[in-house]
Image 1 (cartoon, rainbow, N blue to C red):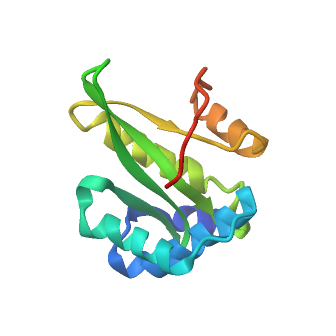
Image 2 (cartoon, rainbow, N blue to C red):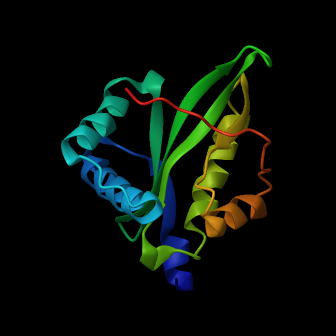
Length: 156
């Protein structure tokens, strides 16, 4: 990324007009990281659901020269142990042409800024594929720490 493009990088709240880009980014991320082909209709409805009910979370978009080049979604989890709320980073994606140019770092910095400024937020979390070592290195470089938890699920 050139220095001009870097200075043009902004992070903003996603808007309903960004839904198509968010869907495309999620489709690409699922295919790239998990070799999964998501159902576009289901994904589109899921993206729209965040805009319909903001208590579910919100998206941030990184934009360079008027074009979305990255995104992430924040969802909320209440912790009774800590009497506070975790913000979960999900659906993280940076377009391949813009990787290693500080896009995720800028998105993350905005998440941390907002989280620290929001009463009751106790921290941020994310999960990552075990084999995605590049992403893990990026998260560690931003002072995120690996936890001792493993994740289980049962999909209905």
